[in-house]
Amino acid sequence: MNHHDTGAADPASADALAEQTAEAMFRRDAASHLLGLRVIAVRPGYARVAMVVGAEMANSHRICHGGILFTLADSAFAYACNSYNKNTVASACQIDFLAPAQIGERLEAECEERSLTGRTGVYDTTIRDASGKVIALFRGKSYRVTGEVIAALEADGSA
Image (cartoon, rainbow, N blue to C red; front, side, top):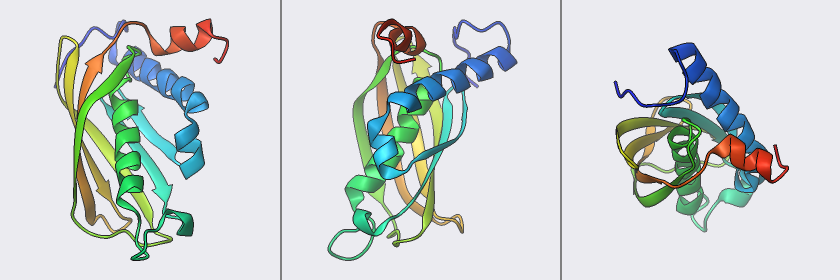
């Protein structure tokens, strides 16, 4: 378990801050709204995001487009690495596609922090279908930039 300065005095406060940060991010996350993503769970260094594969998300093989799967995983990664209310961006990401996702399937992307040292972190995201079958594995590397998510949203009037 990683321990970080979240600005919260106890685990319950850290969980509440993570949830508030995710709510603030989601309000401004146009890509997540476009794809119908839902944030299922968030806590420090962790997020679970779900979506249903729509027909408009299919490629020419009539399976979910890899770019959509990448976006689902990247979104879970974003909620996990920003869960400390510190502005954090991706510095590198990679994905392995293991199985096709079909139109109409509900997918969940579960992201877990593996390392957080200074400004950099490593996060692994697993996308699964409703039966638990692994669809894709994603690894994201994060970099913390200046500012805080909630403070930044409040400052520009979006919170």
